[in-house]
Image (cartoon, rainbow, N blue to C red):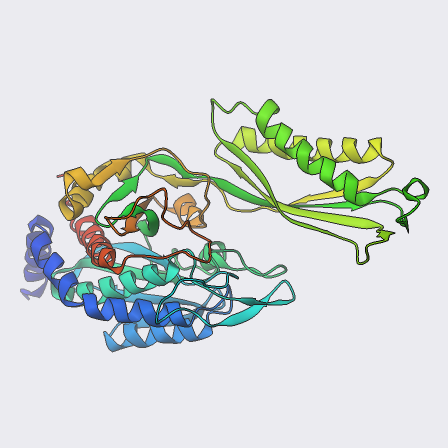
Length: 431
């Protein structure tokens, strides 16, 4: 007869309790060696998007060891862990991405990747060249820290280990969008979500954030130029799609340099693939351009789409060629809910220190965490992973063969994940 009142009293006591940040920091320190071990294992055995089979098994085994409810095969290879606190309360999600990139590692590390995979029909090196291995390890560490505090948790923490952040293979679905489509937020009544991304050019112990639009929308485009094949010695007998494609590349940059209101928001158009021909003395029939569009404003994005189609079509017509222009749906802007960002700042500062937390401008990188942010109030943070003694201008960038992370920063990610979850569940944010 007295069970319910006692439960309510316990819940109220928990809601009124303060998170012991020093205790969480010590717990993160205690598990740090294991976090580094997990990170090195995942780094040494990377897997491409929608192919993270062994990575998923590795994560799931750890979560099951902690006694959590674990769901696998989410969005093909994703893993979801559900930690239900002993006290009633809301549900919060913590997310880490798990896929690697088609990059051949050059870093001289004992755990450097030697893995290969298939990308666009070719055998490629595979590397965690964006730090997703650190995200996995930090969230595994936070899962351990939080599971040890299950008795004091008023609510549920959902751990989202998300595949295919770098984009599903062509013709496949994947990533955050597919996880949401399969009900990962709805099924567990998730109210808020938090994500962390390591940054190789921000010193260890520091954190960057921005309310509102923090990362750009990203859209893949493909332009197929159709000309007329001819012998290389008589170009006037054909229509050269290679020279047309080259002019289109230049024309696309004019959209940025002369047609976009860059004082409003940034715009980037980059061509990453240019394919044409098989022999030195044959002008081919077709050429293909593949690239990325980055925008931070919806109206500007639609304007850029229209201008790309117009520019490519007009340049082609001037030379007697034709084009097909395809622009994929892509990722939306990664939007940090301003109210949630402000409410959780006390937690962030308590974790890292006032002097280590920095308000920054938006960046033109993109993240499919943006899909979670479309569904529930969310915040996405950038955590330092650069050795403090290193010059940021010399630190290797993300998506490069020399990308490297200082592992001394991982414990801060473990702390931040854990503190954000506990403070949100306890309603302590903003106090």
